[in-house]
Amino acid sequence: MVIISFTGFSGTGKSTIASSISFDNNYPYISFNGIVHKIALDSNLSAYEYLEKYGISKASKNANDVILSLIRLHDKNIVIDGLYDINLAKIIRDRIDRHTIMIDISAQRYLRIMRLAQRKQLDILKAREVCAKRDSYKLSIGIRSIIKMSDVQVANDTTPLYAVQKCGMCINAMMRR
Image 1 (spheres, rainbow, N blue to C red):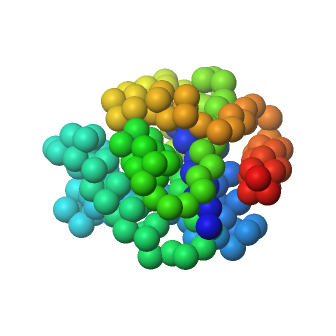
Image 2: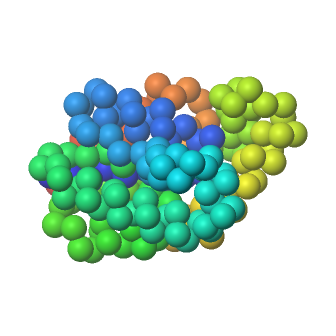
């Protein structure tokens, strides 16, 4: 069994690519951001309110615990969307008895801002602000180290379909090893 995880900054297309890979291959899909949102909702807070109140470290640790529980429940390949925390990355890589494939999705900053503006229906200045805030959260929990650990780096500067195809080819090649 294989854990396929996607990392990268906001607006790179991680969720689009991860959900497509998951759907196309009928693999369970785990979303780090979805788990943080659920934990926040259980506390009657928005994700940003939760992060402001408890800090990124606590939010990340709680999400990590849920993700590790979900990994242990499934006995087939899994897709994790949003591997941001270096502690979770090390646990998955070193202590979980499964092959792991870590994929870093990147995109030029102006494309990331444009994608966020479109997805969240924001003006460009607000999208730039949201992008910077999200990036700072991810930087504080170790995303740069995870990017360095990644097995594959895919630039998503064209269309998501191209990036999905490229990721699919990389995953297939790595699973054959």
